[in-house]
Image 1 (cartoon, rainbow over the protein chains, first blue to last red):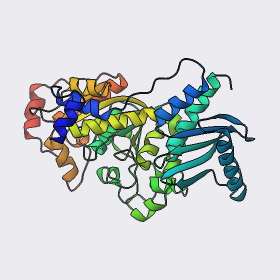
Image 2: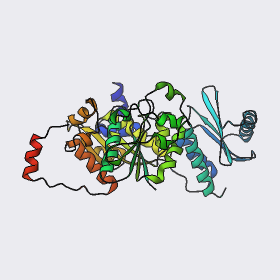
Image 3: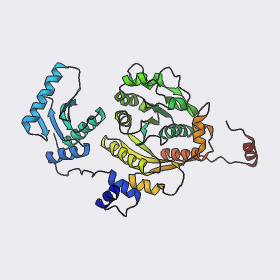
Image 4: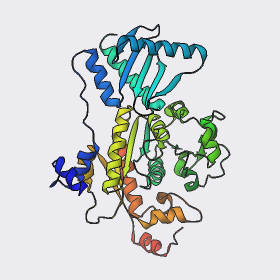
Length: 141
Length: 258
């Protein structure tokens, strides 16, 4: 009965089985913004990588872009700096707060702070950083 | 520079390892220089298929940082090179899968094709294996569960910057309700490189006392032929059709299968 209800909600009652699989499995694909608006690029990255927030800093702690209020973002950067100072060779820091992961790491000459609803592995973090840097470079950062 | 391709699947048990091993053998048979890496470090099976279970140095040693990848290479059929994974669960707990990327990069220029047999699913090890390559081939079986999982792995591949190259449909029985090549192509929005029939010869190849890839053991079986066609499609090398005369036919009737 629940299945029938779901199919009705998605308008898939008469759809072939493989069409149902597709409609129920594939999330809406985010579209890459055409203009150089940094907010829309961050929003695109959030949707593509399924994360809740992204802050990007230069190596010296200047904010490049953030989805959070600047004060909060700077606070998180200072936490990263402090831990990096204490644990010299560490590259990635994972913290959990109220069920949310806060992950900070250095990539090339940027520092990233990512908020995510679930744990992200190094491959996923690398992909976020690579995408962000590519898009930022295309904007002339 | 060679092509690096991971063989992935969303669901376990779809025959990913069998396809990785046989595709690597098929391309070697076509004259390509091929390296096969077993990156399914938790459930390593390539070693069993190529009878390398007692290999002294394996991928686990490479990922532990204790050996060089060149020391973990072994010779397979038709000039294929195989890097097996160790069977030790204890060593598996200590490895760093992220080292795989640099290991693959170190040998990329030495081969025409590097195939990486990835673990099933979208876990850390599976992603690390995929991320070590530029392209991915998704193995599916023609049922809705396998296809739904294949869709997810395709999306993950795209998200981490790996190009989904195509799909292979395995264990095709042509039963009513099975997804056709068109279904799979439309659903995954990806080229179907070929379909492999459900062939008892494949199972026999694994169950024998001395297991061997089906292409080596039964080259004329339907699965072997399908795999050769896929290898030909990937490489663009035409398969030479051997003309079979009357005498060859008679001889084949009396030939004992290995």
